[in-house]
Length: 483
Ligand code: ADP
Ligand code: MG
Ligand code: ZN
Image (tube, rainbow, N blue to C red):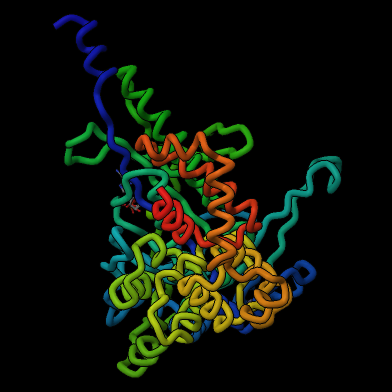
């Protein structure tokens, strides 16, 4: 075989991305992982420190029980098996944000392992401490003429849980979607602020590609600290494209750590495998193992709320919602709570219609705001949806009523009455339809000839004449009756 057919074969080959995620979650405990300092929320730099989290010689760490509790909750929520006994290790490296010269983390025996969230298997969940924060002051902070960086130790020692997935993700979009599921799950647990912009949720993506159908994994690269869902998706897509181009040209992927610059879209190496750190892990001699008692396990288990994935299933199977709507409501618990209160307020079964009004009109009205913070009561939404079903108010007019309810509250029936928004009906509507059909004689001819789309012209005329107060289905019926 000559060079050309080989090149052609490479050019045509289909590749499959393989992605594994490593997620760091800052826990919202009261105090740090191994000392009594309170967690910092934008206080003056270096005001939330003590000899332990500054790494001064002679100090001893003590494990934060609340962090262990949160860690167990996360492990259980992700379907992992908590280890009967796990230990801490020292992970050694030298960096200005790490005063001890090592990070206390977990290594061969993590807190929990072997779980699943959605379609993705969880490899492990472990506890560790966050590093301090380097503040690059640049030219404005010159010391002895050189550009300066400063260290803020307030963040140093913040409890972290690291979650490592199996390489089960197959696309950048799936990675972002799954991370959203993880975030909403963690939020529901109440163990973290899970804010990517503020760094309480951080994600590294391990990326490789392989010829479609192949079972062995390709060489992976690691994208560090994707700090938004959009950047994660863009970064992974850029890296998959880069690797494909490399392989199509007959080259090979080098195992390395990469930085994705969201401004330029460029990927640049941070370090390669050759210069990878040798962390010289060894067991932390100053800390006792974590051996959860039955009481600790039970306490974590009973602290678990209904999780978004379970709620989505319940909304689908018990309330008959379609999967997309169920997921939307389950993943935004404020909407889900509002929906369940509104659905409970109905005697009849308007659940599906109420859900559609929430994910459609209501979200269009209030965006990311919590509906419970508006003037709209779940009971009034339920009543409004019931009026639409009964035909006492037309859909388009009901949208205006909803806007009023959101801004001012009140009773939907009274608003309909006061603003004369009640559905046009009876003789009034019949007269309007007669008039519209007389005015739209061309359209009526087309409808007679079998062109159903021409109904739109008559419908439009009726809606204009009634200012949107006509019920579409009723108008359709009246038109047919007259043909
Ligand atoms: P390392 O030893 O380099 O940290 P690990 O085996 O611990 O690698 O895996 C780290 C992360 O990388 C995990 O999320 C895992 O699923 C993922 N991963 C491992 N191998 C690959 C691969 N070939 N392609 C994509 N992701 C991978
Ligand atoms: Mg790793
Ligand atoms: Zn401290």
